[in-house]
Image (tube, rainbow, N blue to C red; front, side, top):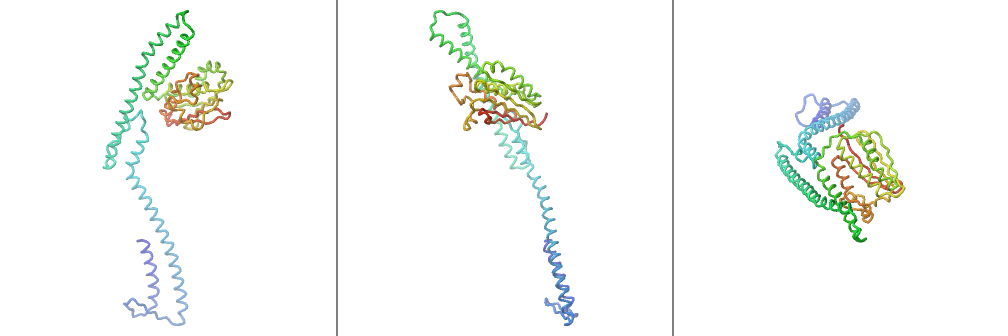
Length: 359
């Protein structure tokens, strides 16, 4: 509308310039009669051409200014109107982003004035209830199964300890081998049950401790030094000051499992290097070994429960196949990420990153 009015204004100005040269009596028709002496015609043509050129330039300039100003004004108005209209959707999206398995009950969406979003919120809350029930059933099943298994395993362990504490000169080699195998497998089952029980209770552990990660790394290296000496593995710690918020117990278990895994699956006379540092709001932890490495196609699967890259060697080392699965769950509940890379010497590097929102 403004551009149209602008054009009409300049056309009318040209019309007036021509009409002023017309018959003084005037003419109400659409036709314009101009009476200009021959000696003044060239002068009129020059002046009229200049006026047409100026009007054209002014029209282009003013039209561009009007278009830009109205576009900016319209964009600003649209931004605020759309922002206000989409605010419930944005809040809904932010709420969904905060959902974790441990806070399902706190992630419900309150009633909204927008009818469509209100119905979506109701469906979302019902979904959260179903998920919460499913997670609770799964946790209870794992916990109950672990508790039920602990009793017979404990009785078996007591009987084996009693048997091993006494001498049995009449036993042959096969009997001794069988007793040894049963003892080892019972110990393995005990460790597996303990890990399953810890994993089932993972969501209930508080995660508001102030953790000095470099101190935990030093503690883990000291605790695993005997195992490293037994395997002829050198432990190296390269840690800077790093502080984070989380569960002190779970982070210790994470570092312990990664370092223990690096020791067990390393080459003799190899080394394990643990690095920890903090940059801005991120805390980084890496554990590097000099072992045989993990094939690229299996790097995601190593975090699956009971998955083993080398089954024969895993049985020889006595693992239960839950260590890395537990590590991934600990990283997940701390809003972190973990990945596997190849080391410079062909070994494996486990890299863990934690984003710290507040300290």
